[in-house]
Length: 138
Image (cartoon, rainbow, N blue to C red; front, side, top):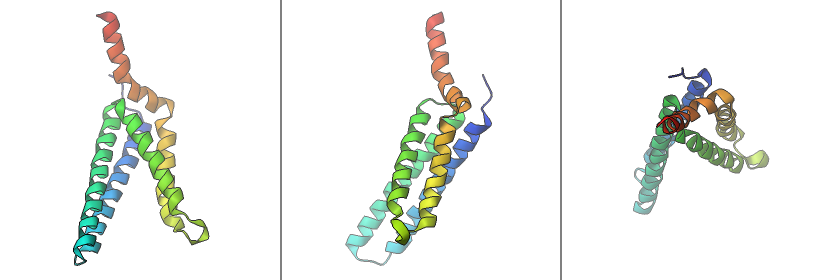
């Protein structure tokens, strides 16, 4: 078994940090809707549950990257593209929250660069390549 490349570990850390940030937003969402009308409370709790679900998905994707699971590459790419879209949507010209947009755009771009680097591609493809080699031998 080959050794995990450092760039894959950095990619996993980025994904884990994004998961923690989403959990923070989920907790903030719950705190801000406590004591509001029932309709707002329900919507806020639903939103927090959705964010917690995405955070769980990202934790699993990060674990997949660390373990060299091939499916995690697609999961990371899809999330980062979505996050870049949200970052661009957040930035609304001079009136938009530029720090928030950058806080979402920069890690997403870094993750996309890392996921397409050869060491990470090879690391995430090794499981599939091993299975193909086993099938060829058998």
